[in-house]
Amino acid sequence: AQKVTQAQTEISVVEKEDVTLDCVYETRDTTYYLFWYKQPPSGELVFLIRRNSFDEQNEISGRYSWNFQKSTSSFNFTITASQVVDSAVYFCALSEPVNFGNEKLTFGTGTRLTIIP
Amino acid sequence: GAGVSQSPRYKVAKRGQDVALRCDPISGHVSLFWYQQALGQGPEFLTYFQNEAQLDKSGLPSDRFFAERPEGSVSTLKIQRTQKEDSAVYLCASSLVGWNRGLGEQYFGPGTRLTVT
Image (cartoon, rainbow over all chains, first blue to last red):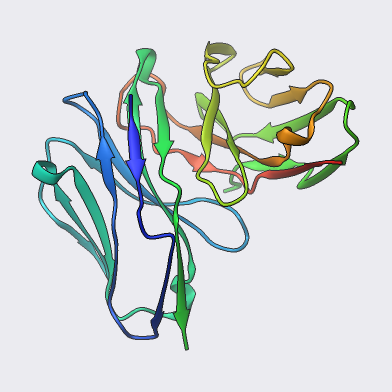
């Protein structure tokens, strides 16, 4: 069975500080995809990144960076120089392989990030 | 272009009533997913369509839940004889491809918040 654990329920940091959101996953599959989504107060899930299980290179996109470590089954997300607009609930998710390209996602419980001005 | 839209955004139903939730995916998207998000939790998979075919309904919690996508575009999630435990946000997502694993980024709608009293 697939499982995603986001142990940090809530995090608050002062604006401009760096913050890392942790994600640990469990799967028996050798091929899988990991995702991060942002859910602002409006409620709509916003896609941030998809990472293939065979690609362990770290990725950076502006102030966002992701550290994928297969050895520890972790896919952590770091926001550098945080801004108030980063305040949201962040979800880590794992894809489950089924037929016909079905990428149904297993989500963690989310981390509520609050950036204090 | 237009994103995924859902209606109504909010629905209050008395216990025992039937409800119908609508999802308009992005035009041309092959795959359509329904997720249920309870308060303070991550979304949980309900069901998946590829065009008009419902290929996976393993997440539907009971036979009171029924989904359809008759023409391969708009989808309706119907809940019969609603119960209080059905109160949640129902999210719809669509993706462009249905046959190539890992290439179908899921775009989420704003959700329908269902409250059963």
